[in-house]
Image (cartoon, rainbow, N blue to C red; front, top):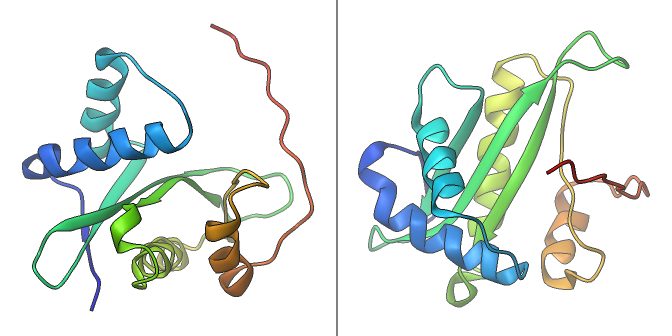
Length: 148
């Protein structure tokens, strides 16, 4: 049974391996400074971004999730943005992604958020099969302007 735990300083090595797998999956690289800063913010109890790991029956970390909240103009409650979700390839199909989404959803519900939402590539068919079972495809497309 998947066990989701909040990210702690002691999880750095396990998190880093999963983080690198996530970046590889999307063909991205980040500087060590960005990775270090991201981890520090994720484990800061007063920070604005949160993180968790999901573990298998042997206690090994097999997935990660990061999320944050922000005010919204279409709701009095904040929205919860699930920014990063990754399950190692060998653990996919074991309910770990679903457990991570459920963890964030429950966290957001307890804090009075109006919704949880996330983005994925339209070509990410494996993940989208899960997402289509647990959420609604809103049909929106993302555009961005890199600033640096």
